[in-house]
Length: 336
Image (cartoon, rainbow, N blue to C red; front, top):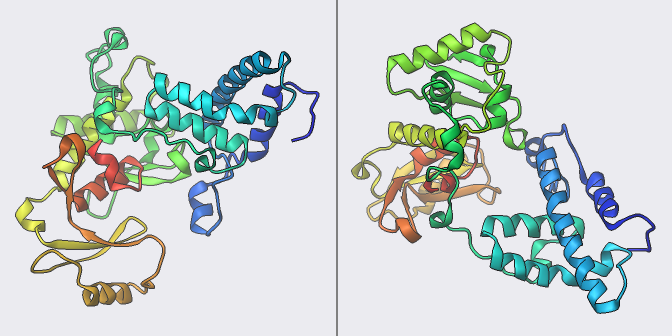
């Protein structure tokens, strides 16, 4: 990087600005085979990256001034401080924060995160604190006064930004008479999806229908309290959806499923639960999918959990259904 008269923060902002592709669908570009690793598609991701890059710049300024007695002039002068900055961050912050920081620095220096030679601690389910326990903000939110919002969140499992963008007209009934939401705005990665309303009783379904009818073509919720733990209600929706579709272990013991692009295209059983290549090949041929296609998997229907959930077995088919309802493409997110 050449000498630059602008501040380091401005230089970093210029680099990230050139990587912005707001309004484009990351999902569609990936389907077309484009490499999307260089770009930033979400403004919230952009602002998060910029914030942590500025933390790094402030750290590098201090270290550089201590070492050379002057301020660094360009970002290349700061690069050698990535490792000590990340070592300090690993000691202070969670693996999630560290992963965010290393990704931000990878975007800044246009390289892979592995190029820095730093091992970020593995993110474990047992370390998750968000929406697991009550906190100070919960005291400022009344579920009784916000009963409609709470009910809608539990039945639909939307993210906060999706919840703010959803309209009454997005509710529809499919050919089987099932109520669903068409989520097309503010979704993660720009991926649209259809969410099946998952309710515990008729009263909850009636509440969702009423809210949608009253809103019509307008947003259902004009304002969402910042104290509302939307992520926790999304967790409840996930449990409901999984339990609705989960089978008993006897039903999927020794069963294997063939997955293409995170969609189940076939299943079969074997005597010992191991892969049968001929059956796998016939399923692929029936679906006109090459055997070496990217995103093609033949896996056990039994998902054996690890770490603190070791010994627990989940139905992978139900996990995939739940994952897609949440707007993800990985069944592993459900065990969190």
